[in-house]
Image 1 (cartoon, rainbow, N blue to C red):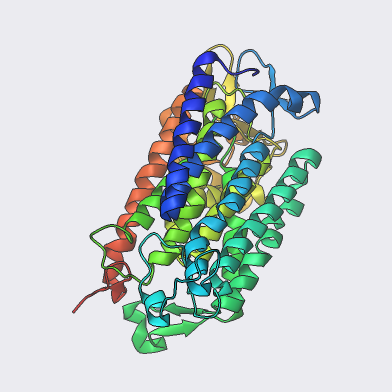
Image 2: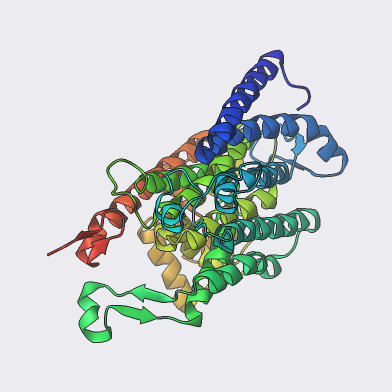
Length: 472
């Protein structure tokens, strides 16, 4: 860590200059989507530079850690996800005026352009594709729906970043920090209640003859959304322990969400589409996220020069929860989180202390081979009864590595994480190979999830809201 190299300085300067030029033109022409892309480029350059410049400062403040999966265990800066999150929040705040300016001027005939007058019908139906999501401009004022959604997302992110930094500083225990994201999600849940309040869900075709086409879940729907806000950050935090895995899985999920958003914006989707604005809202939050995450990924990928800290996991997960909840595609979001869902379910025996759970369950580094191997839980007292049979059953199906003594009693079992399971399946491997294997799986499962969402879902639902396709 330290100063930027000459090549890095020139590259970042060129990226910033090009992004600034695009941003200036986009603002002048009223293109907020292009402006968001340009701001994301600037955010990447700023995050990259700050990570390099602040590394030593963080270490002097005691924010450092040792990489346990290396032969030479040196101290490297920790909690760099906080830098990433702060730059992201600044970017979102700077973006606020860009999508609204022309609509506000046109609707109020102000801002030095008093001759501009639009009819109500023209304002409500004449918005172009790139206009800000949810903005319903009225003749006398701009509806608060658009701005309230955007600002509630920023407020939730600010809350979770503060709580995440507190976790990194004070090492909050799992049972206490599990519900931290639920507290941070209150602003978006309140805005959802005030602006939408929709708690009905579509019933699959085979069940409609029994319970009807829609079911109103009431307060359970808000509990469901709060559960998403809890699950997304914590699931990324659980699938951790090797260089680059937290940032990489987040970038993959964000890119898959962009693919899903593009399906509602491309030329193959009828426009105007009722979901277009929701997916533009998602894009405006995801583009800067990818920008700052790529800068962090550059320093966190194997061999890592910084650690991301819990702050990044909370921050990244909350970004996904916000776009899923306020973008109205939370079920699609969960399809992209299938590996994380599996990892959580697989980890449950240890998370709920049915099986001994060490503080750190990351794969074990073998200094003789330089490879990672499944880490083990040592059973001081052999399990008995149903638990022992269950462990042997998992071992029989290669879902666990079980070591026994000559009496057939369990001495050790591999830790219940998808990283250790991958090593059980494919054997010891280098850290970056393990990360690439998990990311390939994440990408494949995510693409399959999008296919299921937009194609196979038609088997059990009457229509796909992307193309209004209704089965006979």
